[in-house]
Image 1 (tube, rainbow, N blue to C red):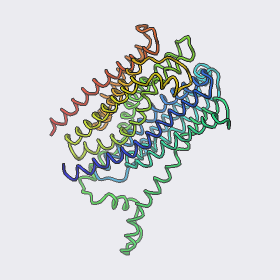
Image 2 (cartoon, one colour; image 1 turned 180 degrees about the vertical axis):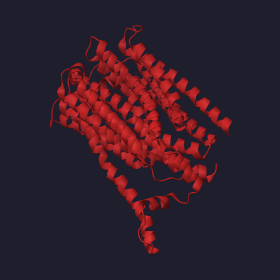
Image 3 (cartoon, rainbow, N blue to C red; image 1 turned 30 degrees about the vertical axis):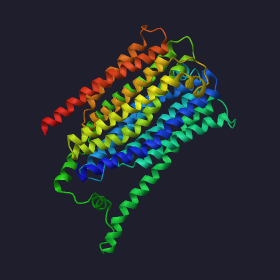
Image 4 (cartoon, helix red, strand yellow; image 1 turned 90 degrees about the vertical axis):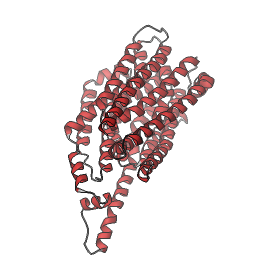
Amino acid sequence: MSASEKSPARSYRRGAGILSVGIASTGVLTFAYFSIASHVLPGSAAKRIDVLWSVMFVIISVIYRPIEQLLSRTIAERRARGAEAHSVRVPMLIQGAFALVFLAVALALHDRIEHGVFEGANALYVVLVVGTLAYAASYFARGWLAGHERFGLFGGLVLMESVSRLCFALAVAVDIAGGETAVALGIAAAPFVSLLVVPAAFLKRGALAGAPQEEARDLGRGPITVDEADAALAGPATEGVQEAAAHDELSLRRGGGFAIWVSGIMLSEQALLNAAVLTVDATANDRALAGIVFNVLLIARAPLQLFQAIQTSLLPHLTGLEATAGHDAFARAVRTTVLAIAAFTAVVMAGLLVVGPFALRHVLFGQHFLYGRAGLVLIGAGMGLHLVSGALNQAALARNRARAAATCWLVAAAAFVGWMFTPAIHNQLLRAEVGYAGATALLALALTAVYRQGSAAVAARA
């Protein structure tokens, strides 16, 4: 392996490591937030908090994470080609349009959401609207930080988000505040608090841009422009590189198409994680059963949140490899990630088999429900397949195959939702566990086929 290949690999491992610490902490703190909420609130109120979280994160993942991915991929590709100036106008326009559409729909469906989803709790409706709008800025910042490989600040952003959210649940636990509204306010406050790290990113960028100006003054040339500073930071660039960067300038049509397909991916992912909660809530006679399903799927959600660290650093890394290092380095990065996921999944499944039912019933959650051991192991297997699918998905996005990836996700999600409405398994919790494992297996197989087709196409061009 050449030195040029080792440097990006080291950067990726370092970035993924930094993010893993921040997002691992975030996953633990998020788990703690819902665990405390289940202890300090009645079962019906805790269930409404679960539903609020599920609904909000379906929405923000569908309308905001595509822009995070778009910014990350676009900035990383341009940086790999030697360009340091990156226009954010198109992603900002798309993000703003998505936020306005959400607001219009939320206002139009005010009564239906408040009474049909939150059982008349107006405060939860307000938290949904305010929190969702605030996350527009948070996810835009994440995409910018990921594209520029500011992984330390990215980790700080998500960590501050989870800490601030947890503080509201703790305030209720120690009787500083009380009720479900106080717990729910943490969900709305978290994205605002997380943005406190953003000024640090621009201060660092300003310091870097100031260095060439100082050198210019020493040479007696006077201050240089921001464009000249960016060029100096980028290092020597050929006319061919500059032309390639200009040709790759993101258009509204290209950016919008990518965002729409990634929205389909995010909608499908949220369906895999939340459709079971929503369908059980709508059909079960036991009003608390949806909360139990949510608790079980947290087993998958928490590692998936941790894996966001890998996904966030993997997309710009793979995009850069595709532009500069070639197919072998690209394939090696994907293979290493999948093998690490397989090892992690084996450990999680073993833990669920041994202590899963006891931990969920007596340690993590207040509801004394008898969790099935086999079902928990199925959730662990589905989690691993979901993680593998996430890695293969980033490979597809890096190769600009968002449409093919989205098709795989949409088919798997539709199969899962359809399964949840069938009476094939009377026990709705077991139905969700079996369905999740089956849907993620289908997804992983389909994305493996997309990955192999992409690799074959790259090899044919070589």
